[in-house]
Amino acid sequence: MGEVRAEILSTGRAYPEGIMTNADLEKLVETSDEWITSRTGIKERHRAAEGEYTSLFAVAAARQAIERARIDPIDIGLVICATVTPDQILPSTACLIQAELGCNKAAAFDIAAACSGFLYGLTLANQMIRSGLTRYALVIGAEILSRYVDFTDRSTCVLFGDGAGAAVLGPTDEDRGILATRIYSDGRFAEQLYSPGGGTRIPPTAETLSGGLHYFKMKGNELFKVAVRSMADVSLEVLNEAGYKPDDVKLFIPHQANQRITEAVASRLNVDDSIVYSNIAYHGNTSSASIPIALDECIEKGKVQEGDLVLLASFGGGVTWGGVLLKW
Ligand code: UT7
Image (cartoon, rainbow, N blue to C red):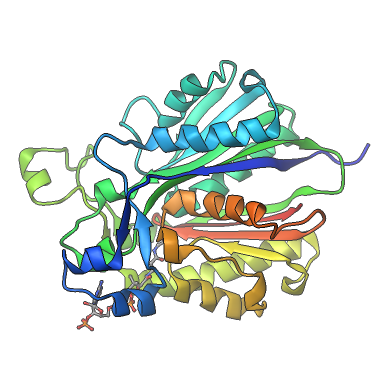
């Protein structure tokens, strides 16, 4: 028997039906379709309606993944929900999902690592499966970022979208699965993307709400450079660890933050555009949901075949970043 690794058995995705186009945003703030398209690559993003909440889409995406994996929810020993826009502070969104799906023997918790949350989750699930602590794990990235977007701030409101993606992982002793993972953080950059109010430091009051302190604030320009460098470096690190080179990668899915970031990372890695997946035009930046949504789309489109090397890289608020290399 070979070394036991965790592999992704299946994926799923779900998002609100509501769509906000660049033309819709032109009516809210001083912006243009031309600016948004050329600076970010985004054309439209899904937006939750009143009454919709994060776990609704998380559960839908997870159900799809569980059905495709053909496993019983009771056999799932770990439910991780990566989110910075939970249903509520307490309990964790993962517990709400766990109950809804009937994963009645699972540990469940949220990970708040912003856009890197899904890769943080894959890293933890990988270790729990390898160590034998659990057989099957469900890792979800789910966000309703539009609830924390200031629709009077043109520098952020054009970027973010809502949605969820999920993956079921299980063990394999065949020559495939997760080959290498790396996750990092640097809280010195915390205030480059953050929501100052609404927690214990600045508790929610009528004043903090009217002052918009719960909204996401971002120094996009400064983050841009760190994002490109971190995602390229961590990609090389996981490739090196597994003994591969960028040329060997058949599919590269970076976190969808900005089309220009994706292109800059691809150029640093010197990989061909044809292997780099982008769906930012139709989803915007969905934070922790962006990579699992993209992966599910790639599987549906037949972009990933048995034996392919798949590289995932992320960067987000915290700041946090990570890389995962898989053999399909
Ligand atoms: O999810 C992971 C974490 N997030 C990121 O990694 C995001 C990284 N950053 C970015 O994607 C980009 O920095 C942005 C898309 C956020 C901004 O693009 P940029 O090319 O860095 O623009 P900028 O912030 O340097 O702003 C350039 C100009 C400014 O005007 P002035 O000061 O030059 O007159 C902005 O006020 O563009 C203006 N601007 C806009 N104009 C029209 C900013 N947002 C808009 C807008 N429409 N929506």
